[in-house]
Length: 149
Ligand code: IDP
Ligand code: MG
Image (cartoon, rainbow, N blue to C red; front, side, top):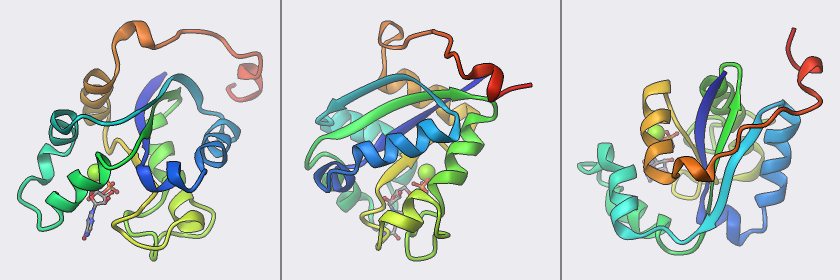
């Protein structure tokens, strides 16, 4: 089983979309193993988006992510990193396929609803950055035999 890090961004929290988004993740079959509403400290935002330091949108990105609470999550499932990115959709919501979270709920790249780790390596890094091990739960869901062979 694979784990990935997801973060519902301030725009979606302010638009009361937490329930809608978690519902899509649950219905897909991914298991929530950690979750918290939090205001992101500047240092965490900078560490999380370190790869984008040189991008023209970096300053706006950091001020947006720290501007209001986010809902950070860890989800688990087979091929979870890829599956989550797939249901999230393309970075720019105006190009994201309808049926995806960004394709259905967003309009512009600067307000694109949700973050999802882009590889197993970044997922592990981001999970460690955002969560302590005691904040993550291991449990079995009764639906699992109906999701996996
Ligand atoms: P991703 O979130 O789909 O992995 P990245 O390229 O890693 O996309 O960019 C990180 C975040 O930076 C995006 O989710 C979006 O919030 C923001 N971003 C990316 N490109 C642009 C842009 O061209 N203008 C404004 N914000 C951008
Ligand atoms: Mg990315």
